[in-house]
Length: 62
Image (tube, rainbow, N blue to C red):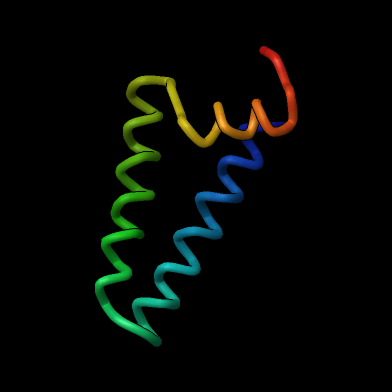
């Protein structure tokens, strides 16, 4: 369940930052890159900060 929420949050962040880049300022693409870099890092290290935060919020254990 947590993995699906993490993917949804990442997708929402990317969509919002792209929309902000189109309609507000192109510098919002840095945020898009940051989210993508974090997704790549979590794939390599199998550790995701957002997952840890969501586990604490929902009090879910492995």
